[in-house]
Image 1: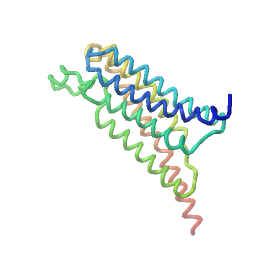
Image 2: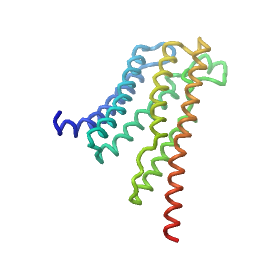
Image 3: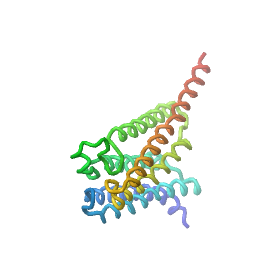
Image 4: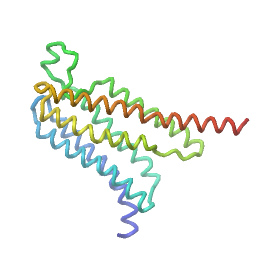
Length: 216
C-alpha cells in the first residue's frame, strides 16, 4: 500500500463516520414508536455500527502507520461526539415516547429508557473533558485520550444499537424484560460515562499541582 493511501486513509475513515452519522440520523428520523417505519430504524442500527467501526479503524491505522495528524486529532473526537451525543438525543426524543405510558401518567414514558436529564449529564461530561484537554494542551502539554475515555466509547457504541434494537423489535411497552434490559443498559452506560471523566479531572489536578510546586 502506498504512503499516500496510508496517510489519507485514517482521515478518510473519520470523514466517512460523519457521513454515516448523518445517514443514521436520517434513517432514525423516519421511525415512530411502536412500529411506524421500523425497517428504517433497523437500517439506522446497521449505519450506527458501521460508523462506530470506523472509529476503531481510523485510530488503529493512524497508530500502526504513524500518520497521526492535526486534522485527525481535531476531527476524530468531533465526529465521535456528533455520532454518540446525537444518538442519545434521538433516544430521548419524541420518536421513542410510548403513548399509552404518557396517557396513564406513568413514571417511565420512553421505550428506550433514555431521558433528557441523562443526555444533559453526558453532554456535561463531554464539555468538561474537552475544556480540560484544551486548558492542558494550551500549556504545551500533550493530553490525549485516556483509557477510560476509550472504554466509555466502546460501552456507548455497544449499548446504543442494542437499545434501539430492543425498543424497535421487542417493544418494551409490551415486554417487561425488554424495558428493564433497556434501563440496565442505559444506567450502566451513564455510570461508566461519568466515571470515565474522573481520570481527566485527576490528571489536570496533578499537572496543576506539579506546575505550582515548580513555581514555588
